[in-house]
Length: 178
Image 1: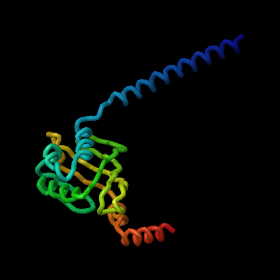
Image 2: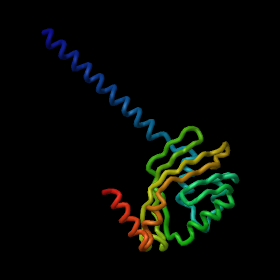
Image 3: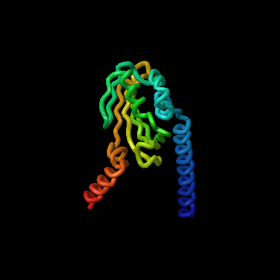
């Protein structure tokens, strides 16, 4: 009888812990799914996916006048330089879109990992290709970006996609692998 009673108690405890675990899991899931993106995250996703060579005025709502921007191509220190940079970079782009994979932030410093899907006749024989990267963006009190650094492999994006040059770079990379 003692054995049967202890087994019943054990089964009740197990059921109790199982139900508590389910409730905790549900609560955590509900918190995660009900935690909406903050305004800086929404603004960044919008900006990355809407910017084109002919609408650089949207940069006024994203960057501060004294933006400091760095990427593998160069360095920019004003909003007017930023507009000229994007106008030049995006000229001839047939399509561009970003899929954001991970987003992390602490206070006003954000990290966005992304895949950029790019189609331009200038690269990759005009076929769409993907470049993976990370953006570090710092926002000021007005929710304008005053620091933006992009990390991506320029060789993967440009050099490997140029006729002739791309073949040589891929050969060198393959030799280094072995």
